[in-house]
Length: 150
Ligand SMILES: [Zn+2]
Image (cartoon, rainbow, N blue to C red):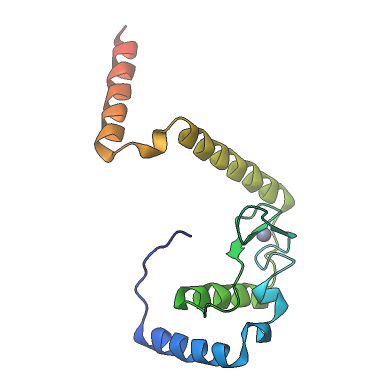
């Protein structure tokens, strides 16, 4: 699992601790099924797909929503609580009504980005350092200027 850091207000932190205690007291089974293991995407209403190689669900419609399976037994990390809270909020908001043409274009763009990411990993470009990336950009600019003059 990958992690990101965020700064949260004190009241959110205190509520998160209280919510975790409440959840541990009641057990994860007390969570609504549509929040714990959603069958439909809380963001777009598409069908959620359980991944075979990791404990995660992803939106099959390609809106980008994904959610890890919440494991029983090891307690609940505060960060996971935020994820469940967001799932619950999206569930309450209901799926966004999106123009079908716009949805199709977004799905196509997401697939293209995913393909570019896979290709960069395959070619090892994801391991480049910032100075190496900057050097590549400078070289490409020099090449373009030279082509224009020719
Ligand atoms: Zn979705």
